[in-house]
Image 1 (tube, helix red, strand yellow):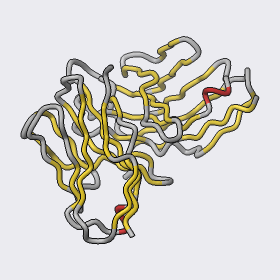
Image 2 (cartoon, each protein chain N blue to C red):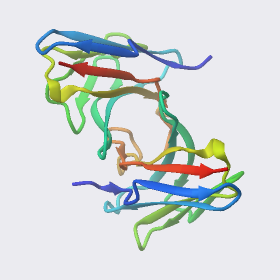
Image 3 (tube, rainbow over the protein chains, first blue to last red):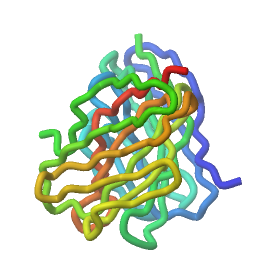
Image 4 (cartoon, chains in turn orange, green):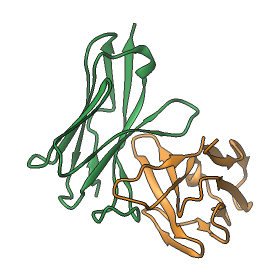
Length: 114
Length: 114
């Protein structure tokens, strides 16, 4: 089954404690991206990757890091989480075969930073 | 600068009636638009898309209309069903059709009342 898998689904942590949210896709997609969803703000792009070793900032990259060492994995790293990073996070992937290709999303990670 | 706007945070419709969800955009370079549907505790899923060279695209009960002169698109659901109750996001990939920046609207929560 084609899917994007995020882990964990829920995470509660404290300010300053480094964490990683994993994302993996089994569709051989070149493109992967991270979004955060906040009330009244919709989905905002954090980082994206066009292929292995190719990453770039989205609209709200501050406080986040990513890496793309393998095509299927795109982890999101919070080196020193702060309460304003409490949010619902989604990983997504897509092929780049044509215009308007749809994104496939993971089920989300609800992060609370205390 | 919110380039894609959904000005109605919520909408309630009776079962069997038409639901109309609206989306406005400011960037005339967008050449593709997509609608995603999101249920609670799940990631968004692709619903329907439209190219800027068209003014209408239909898929079963779902039709998207594009008015380029007004920079406005709308999603029509006819007839509405309780299972359509979800949050709907409109989205626009980067102007070249690539995915460097997929801009999402803030979402409209649709409630279909049985």
